Amino acid sequence: MAKSLELTFLTETGKLSQLSIENPKEPINPTAVKQAMEEIVAANVFQTNNGSFAAAKGARVIDRNVTEYELA
Image (tube, rainbow, N blue to C red):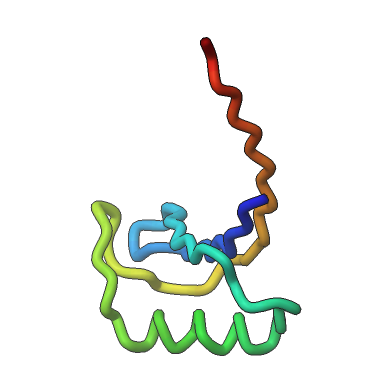
């Protein structure tokens, strides 16, 4: 089972852009996530094809189960 925390930001051009964090510390604290996202926006350290991050839009945890089969 693989989990990731996906952070969604609104860019300067009004498009959405995501950052994915593998194996996030649980339980997820929504207040801390929002604060971290606001700090990322304020720091202006990420540049996308659609401009810099302008606002925090949302966050979600993605839980994925992977089963591999060895084929003979």
